[in-house]
Image (cartoon, rainbow, N blue to C red):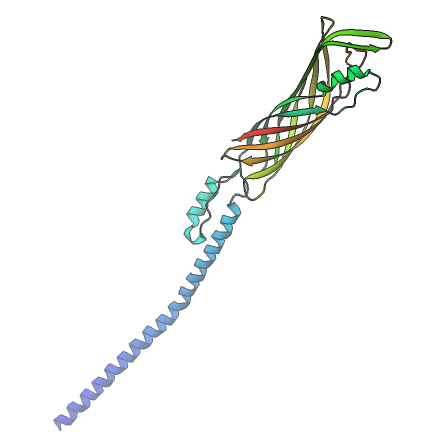
Length: 286
């Protein structure tokens, strides 16, 4: 009898133990099922953050040579602190541009038809000469800048003897001309910046003051001829960045200018001084 009762008690105890184990397993399974959606949401948030960081990096990644380059890296290696640091470190393009240029210039104004051929032949070398220029520009945006532009043109010729007749007067002597034309004025610069950060195109417009001088020596007498007026110039150029802050390039310029009558010891007037030029440029950026 006693054995039967002991057997019943052990069976009941084992059943209770099985019930407790089953309840514990059920609770653990329920808690695991509740935690899984939160893990998925966290993973989704992490992916969204990486995408957002990648988009932000593309927005701040510089597309022109005037912005400091940001290395192209996988967006997973950036976090919010890195993004803010990049935005703070690389916010701007270089605003100042300083340049010099030198080359060849040609006066395209036609010669008067009423001067002798001897004088026309003498004046041909005076229609071409050297050109020097300098400019400083401050860019108010990545594409538009305001500045000042200066250029000078020089040409000269000399003969030991020249003879020609104008309006019945005979002129015969040695002759020498030293011509200088200075042009300076405010300018507007517009530049187009490609994505490869090496080559860009710019166009400048200048309206300003120019002065004409000619030191003429004729028949052992020196004449100081002067003229002045306002003119307009436009130029287009390309620049290649060969260093971090310096570029070399080519510039094509057209200047429209004329002076009020300049009395020259030949009976003629110099009026139209419009010219074209081709020059090499060297520029630096700050």
